[in-house]
Length: 196
Length: 196
Image (tube, rainbow over all chains, first blue to last red):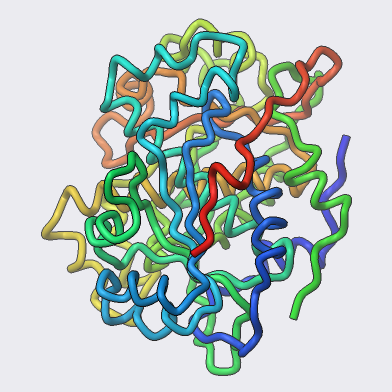
């Protein structure tokens, strides 16, 4: 049986972590992105389907492709982030179930129902996006997730002719918190939770 | 700048963690659920909207209310779990935005568009369900998440007359891994990730 992880890790993942809106001038090398994927991929998904796909935008060309899709309030922090992750999902994720979940004919659960497949892809790629945020923090990166952008424009710019669709974006880098606002409140246990 | 968290914590959260399907006979006290919520609530959500709501089912009566909604394959592991969490969302989550996000009139972004509000609630409660999984592991609990159940039956049994809707379930307790299968594979970086 496991103990609670140490307080440094709890702070880094949850209690002290903040969303970054400004960035230090410090690069995120590609090796760090491999490290990030190798952690986040281990998070659980329904029937191990792992529907999320990720585009890590590091180049100026990639950023320019993204720019027209961003809302005004998300523009500067995203264009200055060392890496922007598009958390996406593959609508045809079930094609890989014979490899990912060999115990059963799981592919047939999805091929007959596009709505069920899409709901599964959206829910589980959202989970995997949260694993990305937690894994990034675990390896010392700061994150800034956002859904304030035009999904159709991102899909047209990055996923034309494929079965991939964008879910949300996560800026990645080393945050500059010198001008950060105070932390926002959360709902109290009594309001958000029932024990029955 | 933060370092990578220690290898014990990385193992406990990602690399060594397994989904539990059998449980030790060991209770999860209610204080542990408070500890769990106080960590998971800190995970980031869109405009800090925190749309997830949680029902922790610990009693035999609560389990019996849940039973008819479960798929056959999820029945035994769920009925024997010390706690079953219903990860839900409040469709009227935006009513709390004046408290949660006082910087702007964020409530008005959602009140005119039920579809946008529902998408935001579903995506962000999924993120918060993933934070629950990670936070549970961080405090030494094992988890078993599942979407194989009848959401409409859960909503009728637990959320009748409210604006709460079920998203997915997470069994919580101390796992018995003596008969666990080998770990399933994951997609390689080259398939799931593009760097541009």
